[in-house]
Amino acid sequence: MSAQRGFFDLDERYAALSAAGDPLEKLAGLIDFEIFRPALDAALQRSDGRRGGRPPLDAVMMFKTLILQTLYGLSDAQAEFQILERRSVGRFLGLDDGDNAPDETTIWRFREALVRADAIETLFARFDAHLKSLGYLAMGGQIVDASIISAPRQRTTDEERSIVRDGGIPKAWAAKPARLAQKDRDARWTLKRGRRKKGADGKLLAEIPRPCSGTSRISASTSAMASFVPGRPVTPPVTTAGNCRN
Image (cartoon, rainbow, N blue to C red; front, top):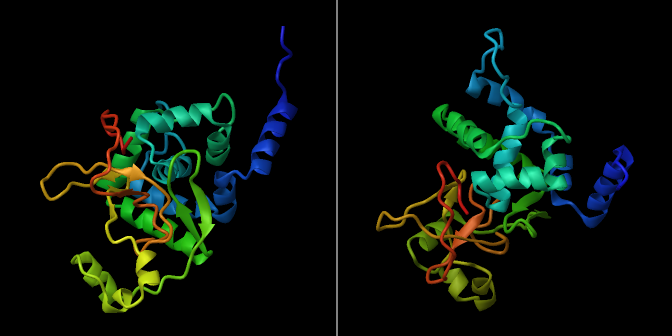
């Protein structure tokens, strides 16, 4: 019969995660997520609990779940699984063993509540700006490689961005092949606050999650952590109600 696990065992696991370089721990150390609570409370307008019933899960923890989804490209169902399965995720969300964890329906309802309140764009923009002000970017990708990196300095002008959006190549870039090689003009963001965009034909675009550094479209924004590369085969996304993406 195996010995019962104790608090010291959990502390040792957390210490091992930290030593391995847990990016979520780094993100939690950079940002005090409590600064978002007033805006979340105003948007959600939850009752004070006097009518009874099961109290809602903590709003800040749920907002961190949305950030987690966008950083790692997780659907609601995948987010539920990762919260239950990964110690690093539970630590980031402030969940201990035995705490109520959000399921996929709860995550979907929380996101939709922020959408209805027209608050999700503002909240993510504030998160982006705060992270950028500290000199960092959230670099998206698969669950194994997403990380927080120092933000490179971008020197793309508004005129250059306009030319690229129209499918052209700025003259200054064409004259400098080395600079042009660093600009990914074919990539297009396909995720926005966890929702997939539609193409010109009205169909949902496929997406391939990959790090968002080193392109003309890099920003601190976690509003779009996956990019679309035309002609690349991808596995069809899992489709369940309210999912962000596969």
